[in-house]
Each structure stands twice: as C-alpha cells, then as structure tokens.
Image (cartoon, rainbow, N blue to C red; front, side, top):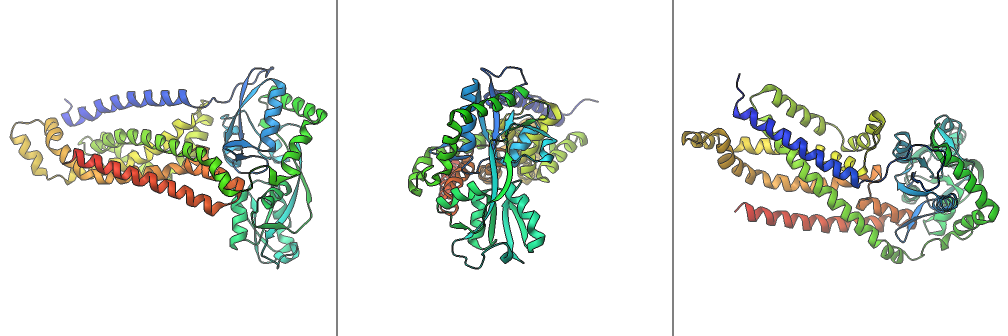
Length: 489
C-alpha cells in the first residue's frame, strides 16, 4: 500500500531530526569534561577526574570562586608531588559516590569515613584525617545541655556522615529522632529555625561553622570517630591509590600536612573573608558563570525540545496507529516521570548500563529537552486541532495539497495560538534547569549553594540568587514577547 503524505512527512522529518541531534550531542560530548581514565601502573603525567562534596567546610568549600579546603589542598599537594593532575568535580557526597560507581570519576575525596560496608565496594587509601563527632545547638537555646535533654525531640545529621552514624547509635537510648540532610549549612539553618534542636556533625565542620557565625554553639565533648580516606572503585586504579598513599606519607614527613590542617583548623575564621558582602563580591563572577551556564543549557535544550515537540505533535495527528502510538508513548513517559529521575539516569545510569561515559552537558540537555519536548508536543497538537477544520477543507477545495495546506494555512494560525504556551514552557525550562545541580551541573543555584556553604548565610544568599533568576526570567519574557509581536502581527 502506498504511504500517504501524512505518514511520509513525519518519517522524513524524524530522519532529519535524528541526524541533527546526533551532531549536537557529539559536539556537546566533545566539549564535556574528561572522563575517568583506565588504570595504569604509572600515574606521572596523567590526569584523573576526582569527585567531591559541594558543601563540607572546612574540607571542601569555595572561597573567591575557587574550591578549597583540607581535602582540596591535600589532593593538590599530593598530585604535584606525584606528577599527576586532577580535574575536580564538585557533585555532592551521594552524587560523587554514584559517579564513582558509574566510572564517571576515578576517585572520591569528600571527608569520607572508612567503614566496613564501604570497604566492600571501594578501595581506600591510608587514613588522612582522624574524625570525631560533636553536638551543637542554637546559641539562643539554653534548654539543651547534653544528650539527656534530647528526649522526644528531633536532631539533624548529614547523610552518610560519621555524625549520622553516631546520632543513630544513641537515638534509642536518649529517645530522640534523627533527620538526615545533605548539607551542613542547611542543618545549621534547621536548628536555628526550630525544626530541630541539635545537629550532630564532625567536630572540624562544627568548629568552622561556629567561627563563621552560623548561630550555633557546641555543648558536648568530641566523641572519637572513624578515619577519612580517599576512595577508588574496588580493584581499579591501584596506581592512583598507591600514589596518594606515597604522597600523603611525604607530606606528613616534611611538615606540609600539618600546615594544611593548621590553615583551616587552628584558626578557622581566617580561612575565608569574615565579611559577608566581601565574600559575596568575590562570588559574583561564580554567580555570573552559573547564570551563563543556566541560559546556555536552557537555550540548547529548548531548541532540541522544539524539534522533538513539533515532530511528536504532528505524529500524534497521524492516521497511522504505529506513528501515533510512538508519539503517545514518548509523551506519556516523559510527562509521567520526574525530571530529576532522568538527570540521574542519564548521568549515572547510562554509563553503568553501557560502559560509555556521559558528558554532564549531554545529560543536562537530554534531561531538559526530552521532558520539555513531551509538553511541547501537546502544545503543538492542541494548537493544530484548535484551528477550525474548515480552514483545511477550504484550502484543499482550492486545489492545495495536504502538505501545502498545513504549511500555508493551518500551521501559521496554530503557531500564533501556541506562542504564549511556548514562552511559558521556555520559562519553566529555565527554572527547571536548577534541578541539574543534583548531578553537579554548575548552574546558578549550584553556585549559590557554594556561597552559603562557606558563609552560612542561606537566606541572604538565596534571596540574591532569586533576584538574579527574576531579572533573567523577566528579560527573557520581554525578549520572547517582542519576538512574538514581530512575527505574529
């Protein structure tokens, strides 16, 4: 049976789209960060991708836009001594471990305690820091003197930390509930806001926060904890692990190790500027860089989403049940699942399933474009079906074919009706790009996190980030409306 024009057009467009998308993703993949390297017996001259936390001062945090801290200084000093270089990926603790498991990074250094459970999955270096746990409360709270005052109350601890382990080990004895959070700064904010009465955390982290006027004060003695280690996947990168151990031993022998610790622990207040506005001024370049990444990933993703949405929207109008079914399945899958799920799946899951590395830019564009493409498809379908059917019939009666009728009569009218919805979808996509911080994409909100992780001024920092988002979105809206007026007179 001969194919109708209705079915031939979408299939030809599909082939063109696939070819175009392949070129885009190859380009983005080439521009992405270097991925994990295969293990070798010699590390000299090699570059390794290392995952770390985003907010764990004084071990890793940003000062003057640069990632610094005990872990960062130790790693850089060891790399210099051993003749290799490192590419640091600030992902967050859980995301860093996921990246290591999927071979997106070669190793992880993030104030990570060496435990038996972790040793079953990862190979650890010699310990580079001996941890300990303390409890802190709000400065204004005089009702909590020790663990015995926690009965019936809620405390917070960082997910996967030594503090969480210790808090849970004594929770039943003292009758309190443990709530796990991802960041030290948000834990401090929870205690100050009253949603929790105390925080359990590693003593240097609490000491640093107190020195930065985070509103807390410690009320218990340090409880000896575990040891921090540098981790690689089990059986992988033994040369990197050996080089780390060798470099660490040399730093301890020549006194450099003690100097690094003293820099952040002897006087934590001197680690970063003490004035919030001074820190903010130093962070403006990072915020602008984050805004640039936000706009760029949104622009690329929206362009791809428009192509996918137009294709899927026309396919949903096809008389061919297979073509229509493919489009319907695409829309249902990506409208019916969370965007964040796909971000994790593309960046961490796909490399595990295929053994192929995934650029964070490709993962981000795929996440945003496929999700928004599903919504654009429904916008396109609805707009085309909203055009009076008599318009198509009239143009066909005048001798125009189906394709020309759609091109010259139906689609222009439909486009005018769908433009406001497309502008709205563009704005939603720009805001949704903030979810990519979960995989370490350096967009605007991610950069804001880096600032308040160092200064513990969450409210002020988020207000500033919110103002930047508002200005960017209003400017984008004005531009989109201007284009709409120009082309839809």
